Length: 222
Ligand SMILES: NC(=O)c1ccc[n+]([C@@H]2O[C@H](COP(=O)([O-])OP(=O)(O)OC[C@H]3O[C@@H](n4cnc5c(N)ncnc54)[C@H](OP(=O)(O)O)[C@@H]3O)[C@@H](O)[C@H]2O)c1
Image (cartoon, rainbow, N blue to C red; front, side, top):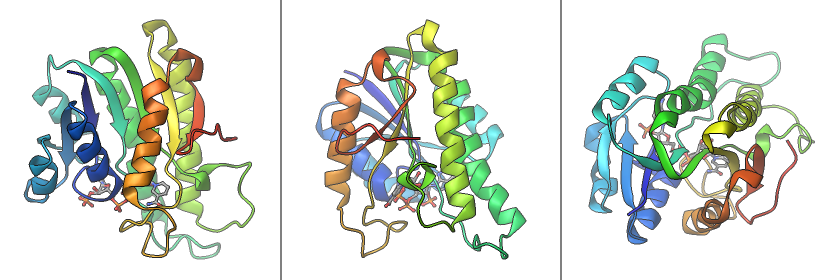
Protein backbone atom coordinates (compact mmCIF):
# COMPACT_ATOMS: atom_id res chain seq x y z
CA UNK A 1 0.00 0.00 0.00
CA UNK A 2 1.61 3.33 -1.05
CA UNK A 3 1.78 6.06 1.57
CA UNK A 4 1.27 9.79 1.16
CA UNK A 5 1.83 12.61 3.67
CA UNK A 6 -0.46 15.61 3.03
CA UNK A 7 -0.26 18.95 4.87
CA UNK A 8 -3.23 21.23 5.52
CA UNK A 9 -5.70 18.39 5.18
CA UNK A 10 -8.68 19.48 7.26
CA UNK A 11 -10.48 21.43 4.53
CA UNK A 12 -10.29 22.57 0.93
CA UNK A 13 -7.95 20.90 -1.50
CA UNK A 14 -6.07 19.03 1.22
CA UNK A 15 -9.20 17.28 2.42
CA UNK A 16 -10.15 16.32 -1.13
CA UNK A 17 -6.64 14.91 -1.68
CA UNK A 18 -7.19 12.84 1.47
CA UNK A 19 -10.56 11.58 0.28
CA UNK A 20 -9.36 10.56 -3.17
CA UNK A 21 -6.09 8.92 -2.09
CA UNK A 22 -7.81 7.05 0.75
CA UNK A 23 -10.58 5.87 -1.59
CA UNK A 24 -7.88 4.66 -3.96
CA UNK A 25 -6.39 2.44 -1.25
CA UNK A 26 -3.43 4.55 -0.18
CA UNK A 27 -2.31 4.93 3.39
CA UNK A 28 -2.90 8.65 3.99
CA UNK A 29 -1.10 10.56 6.72
CA UNK A 30 -2.79 13.93 7.03
CA UNK A 31 -1.66 16.94 9.01
CA UNK A 32 -3.89 19.55 10.60
CA UNK A 33 -3.13 22.52 12.83
CA UNK A 34 -6.06 21.93 15.16
CA UNK A 35 -6.60 18.25 16.02
CA UNK A 36 -10.29 18.97 16.61
CA UNK A 37 -10.53 19.98 12.93
CA UNK A 38 -9.26 16.64 11.68
CA UNK A 39 -12.52 14.69 11.88
CA UNK A 40 -13.42 14.87 8.19
CA UNK A 41 -9.97 13.66 7.16
CA UNK A 42 -10.06 10.98 9.84
CA UNK A 43 -13.53 9.87 8.69
CA UNK A 44 -12.12 9.62 5.16
CA UNK A 45 -9.55 7.13 6.45
CA UNK A 46 -6.47 9.26 7.16
CA UNK A 47 -4.14 8.99 10.14
CA UNK A 48 -4.14 12.47 11.66
CA UNK A 49 -1.07 14.32 12.96
CA UNK A 50 -0.63 17.91 14.06
CA UNK A 51 1.70 20.26 12.21
CA UNK A 52 1.95 24.00 11.68
CA UNK A 53 4.18 24.26 8.63
CA UNK A 54 5.12 27.87 9.41
CA UNK A 55 6.85 26.61 12.58
CA UNK A 56 10.01 24.57 12.00
CA UNK A 57 9.77 23.18 15.56
CA UNK A 58 6.32 21.84 14.77
CA UNK A 59 7.74 20.14 11.66
CA UNK A 60 10.50 18.59 13.80
CA UNK A 61 7.88 17.23 16.21
CA UNK A 62 6.02 15.75 13.23
CA UNK A 63 9.25 14.16 12.03
CA UNK A 64 9.72 12.61 15.46
CA UNK A 65 6.16 11.28 15.46
CA UNK A 66 6.65 9.75 12.00
CA UNK A 67 10.13 8.33 12.61
CA UNK A 68 10.67 5.20 10.56
CA UNK A 69 7.53 5.69 8.42
CA UNK A 70 8.29 5.25 4.73
CA UNK A 71 6.59 7.68 2.35
CA UNK A 72 5.97 7.41 -1.38
CA UNK A 73 4.79 10.99 -1.70
CA UNK A 74 5.22 14.15 0.36
CA UNK A 75 2.48 16.55 -0.71
CA UNK A 76 2.92 20.13 0.48
CA UNK A 77 -0.60 21.46 0.21
CA UNK A 78 -0.98 23.83 3.19
CA UNK A 79 -0.91 27.47 2.23
CA UNK A 80 -2.37 30.87 2.93
CA UNK A 81 -3.37 33.77 0.70
CA UNK A 82 -2.56 36.67 3.01
CA UNK A 83 -4.11 40.09 3.39
CA UNK A 84 -3.13 43.72 2.73
CA UNK A 85 -0.79 43.04 -0.15
CA UNK A 86 -1.59 45.80 -2.64
CA UNK A 87 1.18 48.16 -3.73
CA UNK A 88 1.57 50.91 -1.14
CA UNK A 89 -0.18 48.94 1.59
CA UNK A 90 1.90 45.80 2.01
CA UNK A 91 1.87 44.72 5.65
CA UNK A 92 5.41 43.51 6.54
CA UNK A 93 4.37 40.95 9.17
CA UNK A 94 1.64 39.64 6.92
CA UNK A 95 4.08 39.35 4.03
CA UNK A 96 6.54 37.36 6.13
CA UNK A 97 3.78 35.10 7.46
CA UNK A 98 2.83 34.18 3.90
CA UNK A 99 6.49 33.47 3.10
CA UNK A 100 6.98 31.35 6.23
CA UNK A 101 3.90 29.30 5.44
CA UNK A 102 4.08 28.96 1.67
CA UNK A 103 7.86 28.79 1.12
CA UNK A 104 9.77 27.94 4.29
CA UNK A 105 7.12 25.40 5.29
CA UNK A 106 7.40 23.18 2.18
CA UNK A 107 11.20 23.49 2.25
CA UNK A 108 11.46 22.41 5.91
CA UNK A 109 8.98 19.57 5.21
CA UNK A 110 11.23 18.43 2.37
CA UNK A 111 14.32 18.59 4.59
CA UNK A 112 12.52 16.65 7.29
CA UNK A 113 11.11 13.87 5.12
CA UNK A 114 13.29 13.47 2.01
CA UNK A 115 15.23 10.70 3.78
CA UNK A 116 12.02 8.75 4.39
CA UNK A 117 10.94 8.68 0.73
CA UNK A 118 10.75 5.29 -0.91
CA UNK A 119 8.95 3.75 -3.89
CA UNK A 120 7.60 6.64 -5.98
CA UNK A 121 9.88 9.11 -4.16
CA UNK A 122 7.90 12.25 -5.02
CA UNK A 123 7.86 15.65 -3.36
CA UNK A 124 5.02 17.74 -4.78
CA UNK A 125 3.98 21.22 -3.72
CA UNK A 126 0.71 22.93 -4.53
CA UNK A 127 1.85 26.17 -6.11
CA UNK A 128 -0.30 28.52 -8.17
CA UNK A 129 -0.51 30.09 -11.59
CA UNK A 130 -0.33 33.34 -9.61
CA UNK A 131 3.30 32.49 -8.87
CA UNK A 132 4.22 32.25 -12.53
CA UNK A 133 6.28 35.24 -13.62
CA UNK A 134 5.56 34.45 -17.27
CA UNK A 135 1.78 34.33 -16.68
CA UNK A 136 1.57 37.49 -14.57
CA UNK A 137 -0.37 40.02 -16.64
CA UNK A 138 -2.39 41.74 -13.92
CA UNK A 139 -0.08 42.53 -10.98
CA UNK A 140 -1.12 43.02 -7.33
CA UNK A 141 -1.13 40.36 -4.58
CA UNK A 142 2.56 40.83 -3.76
CA UNK A 143 2.90 38.38 -0.90
CA UNK A 144 1.01 35.48 -2.45
CA UNK A 145 2.56 35.85 -5.90
CA UNK A 146 6.07 36.22 -4.46
CA UNK A 147 5.57 33.25 -2.15
CA UNK A 148 4.48 30.90 -4.91
CA UNK A 149 7.28 32.07 -7.23
CA UNK A 150 9.73 31.39 -4.40
CA UNK A 151 8.11 28.03 -3.75
CA UNK A 152 8.63 27.17 -7.42
CA UNK A 153 12.33 27.96 -7.03
CA UNK A 154 12.47 25.71 -3.98
CA UNK A 155 10.95 22.89 -6.01
CA UNK A 156 13.42 23.39 -8.86
CA UNK A 157 16.26 23.39 -6.32
CA UNK A 158 14.96 20.20 -4.69
CA UNK A 159 14.84 18.56 -8.11
CA UNK A 160 18.54 19.30 -8.54
CA UNK A 161 19.71 18.61 -4.99
CA UNK A 162 17.77 15.35 -4.58
CA UNK A 163 18.29 13.97 -8.09
CA UNK A 164 20.96 11.53 -6.97
CA UNK A 165 18.57 10.19 -4.34
CA UNK A 166 16.07 9.53 -7.14
CA UNK A 167 13.55 12.04 -5.82
CA UNK A 168 11.10 13.68 -8.23
CA UNK A 169 10.19 17.22 -7.15
CA UNK A 170 7.36 19.00 -8.93
CA UNK A 171 5.13 22.05 -8.51
CA UNK A 172 1.39 21.75 -9.17
CA UNK A 173 -1.21 24.32 -10.19
CA UNK A 174 -4.76 23.33 -9.16
CA UNK A 175 -6.46 25.96 -11.29
CA UNK A 176 -8.93 28.31 -9.59
CA UNK A 177 -10.98 26.14 -7.26
CA UNK A 178 -14.01 26.67 -5.02
CA UNK A 179 -12.55 26.44 -1.51
CA UNK A 180 -12.34 28.92 1.36
CA UNK A 181 -9.31 30.39 -0.41
CA UNK A 182 -10.65 30.23 -3.95
CA UNK A 183 -14.09 31.58 -3.02
CA UNK A 184 -17.52 30.71 -4.44
CA UNK A 185 -16.95 32.18 -7.91
CA UNK A 186 -14.11 29.88 -8.90
CA UNK A 187 -14.91 27.79 -11.97
CA UNK A 188 -13.56 24.46 -10.70
CA UNK A 189 -14.75 22.14 -7.97
CA UNK A 190 -12.25 20.44 -5.71
CA UNK A 191 -12.88 16.86 -6.94
CA UNK A 192 -12.04 17.91 -10.53
CA UNK A 193 -8.87 19.80 -9.56
CA UNK A 194 -7.65 17.01 -7.30
CA UNK A 195 -8.40 14.25 -9.83
CA UNK A 196 -6.33 16.22 -12.35
CA UNK A 197 -3.37 16.73 -10.01
CA UNK A 198 -3.50 13.08 -8.95
CA UNK A 199 -3.29 12.08 -12.61
CA UNK A 200 -0.19 14.27 -12.97
CA UNK A 201 1.36 12.67 -9.88
CA UNK A 202 0.44 9.16 -11.02
CA UNK A 203 2.65 9.43 -14.07
CA UNK A 204 5.35 11.74 -12.72
CA UNK A 205 8.90 10.43 -12.85
CA UNK A 206 12.43 11.84 -12.75
CA UNK A 207 12.02 13.25 -16.28
CA UNK A 208 9.34 15.56 -14.85
CA UNK A 209 11.40 16.67 -11.88
CA UNK A 210 11.92 20.43 -11.59
CA UNK A 211 8.80 21.20 -13.63
CA UNK A 212 5.48 22.95 -13.02
CA UNK A 213 2.23 21.24 -14.07
CA UNK A 214 -1.35 22.48 -14.34
CA UNK A 215 -4.09 20.15 -13.08
CA UNK A 216 -4.99 19.39 -16.69
CA UNK A 217 -1.54 17.91 -17.31
CA UNK A 218 -0.04 20.86 -19.21
CA UNK A 219 3.46 21.95 -18.28
CA UNK A 220 3.39 25.62 -17.23
CA UNK A 221 6.07 28.30 -17.62
CA UNK A 222 7.70 29.44 -14.38
N1 LIG B 1 -8.28 27.33 -4.17
C1 LIG B 1 -7.61 27.80 -5.22
O1 LIG B 1 -8.19 28.33 -6.19
C2 LIG B 1 -6.10 27.66 -5.27
C3 LIG B 1 -5.45 28.08 -6.44
C4 LIG B 1 -4.06 27.95 -6.55
C5 LIG B 1 -3.36 27.40 -5.49
N2 LIG B 1 -4.00 27.02 -4.35
C6 LIG B 1 -3.19 26.45 -3.27
O2 LIG B 1 -3.72 25.21 -2.87
C7 LIG B 1 -3.41 24.96 -1.49
C8 LIG B 1 -4.67 24.65 -0.73
O3 LIG B 1 -5.55 25.76 -0.86
P1 LIG B 1 -7.11 25.70 -0.51
O4 LIG B 1 -7.81 26.37 -1.62
O5 LIG B 1 -7.52 24.34 -0.09
O6 LIG B 1 -7.11 26.71 0.74
P2 LIG B 1 -7.99 26.71 2.08
O7 LIG B 1 -9.33 26.19 1.80
O8 LIG B 1 -7.82 28.07 2.64
O9 LIG B 1 -7.21 25.64 3.02
C9 LIG B 1 -5.89 25.89 3.40
C10 LIG B 1 -5.38 24.75 4.23
O10 LIG B 1 -4.02 25.06 4.61
C11 LIG B 1 -3.94 24.95 6.03
N3 LIG B 1 -2.92 25.83 6.57
C12 LIG B 1 -2.84 27.17 6.49
N4 LIG B 1 -1.76 27.62 7.16
C13 LIG B 1 -1.15 26.52 7.67
C14 LIG B 1 0.00 26.32 8.46
N5 LIG B 1 0.76 27.34 8.90
N6 LIG B 1 0.34 25.05 8.81
C15 LIG B 1 -0.43 24.02 8.40
N7 LIG B 1 -1.54 24.13 7.67
C16 LIG B 1 -1.89 25.39 7.32
C17 LIG B 1 -5.32 25.30 6.54
O11 LIG B 1 -5.48 24.86 7.87
P3 LIG B 1 -6.43 25.67 8.93
O12 LIG B 1 -7.82 25.17 8.71
O13 LIG B 1 -5.85 25.29 10.25
O14 LIG B 1 -6.30 27.13 8.61
C18 LIG B 1 -6.17 24.55 5.53
O15 LIG B 1 -6.21 23.19 5.84
C19 LIG B 1 -2.70 26.23 -1.00
O16 LIG B 1 -1.29 26.03 -1.04
C20 LIG B 1 -3.10 27.28 -2.02
O17 LIG B 1 -2.18 28.34 -2.12
C21 LIG B 1 -5.35 27.14 -4.21
